[in-house]
Length: 170
Figure (tube, rainbow, N blue to C red):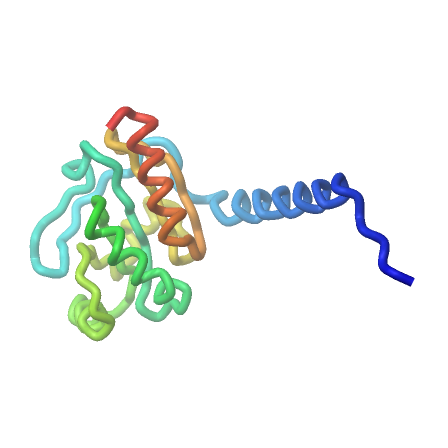
């Protein structure tokens, strides 16, 4: 006997169930992260340049929290590097080691994007981060438009950056 095909509406129900599950996981993962206006902070890039988040307003920004010991973060590094060539990007390394260790990691991986070292977790704490990687898309006014915890594709990040600029007319 041949197998009976499921009706199209059954596939639709299954797809809706998967969508609900994905949305529930996202809501649980981002339950503690900052929303609304992005908490401002001062930091120093690994090259010694001082940076203030509020000075980066004016166009959409990807704010990425990561750690060199995180395998998922390593999977995203190539995407972050590519996005940094076309968009404003600021990353925050939460490694407990010194800035030299973070710098060495970046060199070994062939990465060259702006990094603020946050060894004590002060910046990450102000964003409510409990796990990495964590990505925030800020609109040109400095408001958090999207927050993701866990792996996010480069295409997904680019679309969110585009949407943050579109939603504010930039």
